[in-house]
Length: 214
Image 1 (spheres, rainbow, N blue to C red):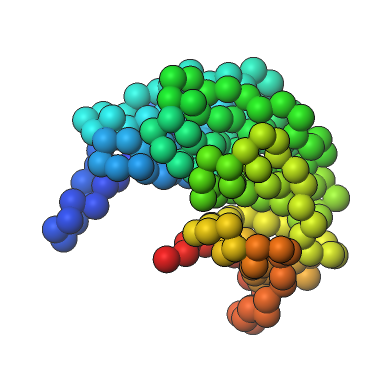
Image 2 (spheres, rainbow, N blue to C red):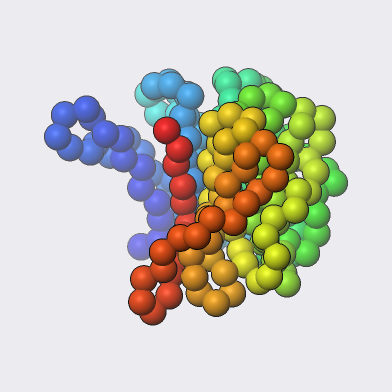
């Protein structure tokens, strides 16, 4: 059966099932702002975006503003109970999709690049967030939120895709993915630019899909 499963660490020695996204759905990312405030995002088999919210007792589906066909969400980040971001793709993978939560409803943010998809998002504050992905030409895509608009920031030259991003401050963020030569890719933001750092690749090739920073 095609569906999704949500589990929570009990703090003891096991995981407890706390919900499912329902039949015919796929969840791709989750984040939390506390024991009573979490988000999980993904898509349905009908090619519609899916947004689930945890209120401390149960997961509830929240209305998505994304009306485009063939849309799905692959990343979510939260700043506060009234400030969260979700990213993904629409139009069958030809259009980036960015949604913003204002505490009452999700709103679609216009003006994002076409011919590309977004895979991950990270937020430091209300005026500092990152979204990463790739273009249909297999080039890295990095967008930065400055509190007013999303703007594209230069990434790394050559063929590559980015799958995950994490940030802890305005001068410390990480993005990971893979190159067109099937090698791991790690980029670091130092407050001024993204730098490509060397990283090991196991024999046979590999890629990275997620990153966390402490």
